[in-house]
Length: 243
Image (cartoon, rainbow, N blue to C red; front, side):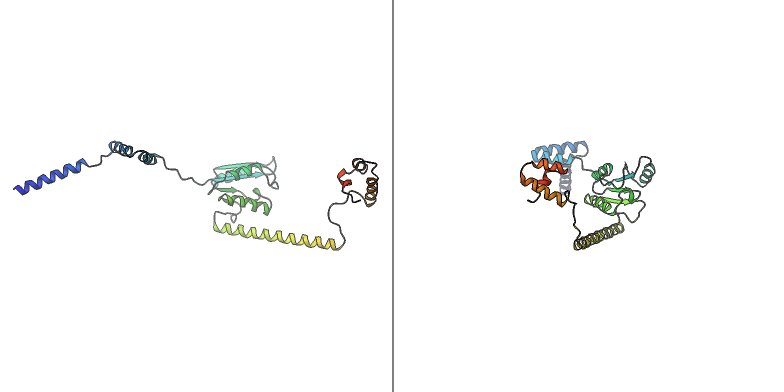
């Protein structure tokens, strides 16, 4: 009987101690945490502030469209509708020739591209007219870790591995074409020199005028400016004449 009473007393004492150390829930728990951090000093307040700061939200990629026409008589509305239907959140509209490399709206949309964004056009010729310009623009997009997609040219899509491969091949072909042009130009210049052709700008003075001007300079009766005006050339042209 005594043993049973002792066991009951020990059990009641354990339940009381467990209740005393039980962590409260709800608002009382938040108050207790604040008091605990406050008791730890500056380190505790900093830890509490870290727990209360909102976590940064992950940025989602944005599809940006670019629509262009060459003249004021044309309309970009059809392009804008296609880009909107394909998921473009914002579309930059421009009226300018595709031969111009420095276009205001194109520069703006490229400046706003962030990592993960996609620049979308309806056709490649809306973005660039030459292969060189296209590759330069794609290089700018790649530097920003963004993608490119053309709705009318399914192979021109850097968001897929197949599209990246095709554009890499296109870049290699353009580089090969430039090397061929450079080689042909050098060969043509060498043949012209061998045939006695003088390259460069045509002289402003004939051989007779050069000899006459040199004599007038050596006579020192006229200034260089006066001699130059008589031949309708600059005084620097006369000053460079060999004596």
